[in-house]
Image 1 (cartoon, rainbow, N blue to C red):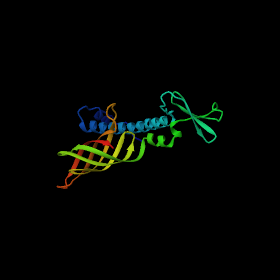
Image 2 (image 1 turned 90 degrees about the vertical axis):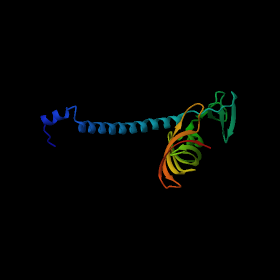
Image 3 (image 1 turned 180 degrees about the vertical axis):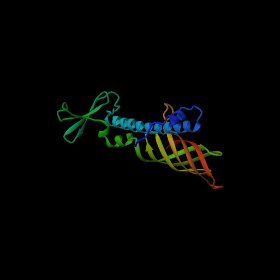
Image 4 (image 1 turned 60 degrees about the vertical axis):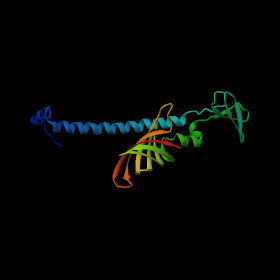
Length: 195
């Protein structure tokens, strides 16, 4: 491509009062920020997941130490709550137990996947609504909820986990659906909790 420098076009681009040029620049900038944000979220999310798998779980035995027989070896739970597999002499450490070594724990800490749970919800569309639904997918702190059945309509929605000390298992969400009586399209803002 042989593009030559055009002095007139360059001067037009410097005009502070041309809204069309500013609009194009703004839209392009927003698109770049969205792309960079998605890439950063994926990278940091994957790093968090890998870090959780390598974490050493602790078992709270109130400061007691115990050995549990496993075939030819023993599971040694130390006073600090960490666990390791030791040889039959109870001294040679074969492996330190990590989250990835416990399939059930690894599955619970996985930040994505199918997670079918019954939920209750309180919401507001044109009036207050109450209902139940299913949470079907999770991706880090985001959840996909479908169907949400309320006293006024049926919805599908996306919710985000609220992480406060006193409030656990709680989410705020936004959904879209149809009303029962008038068959009108509705948007609902809702608070949900898992049973």
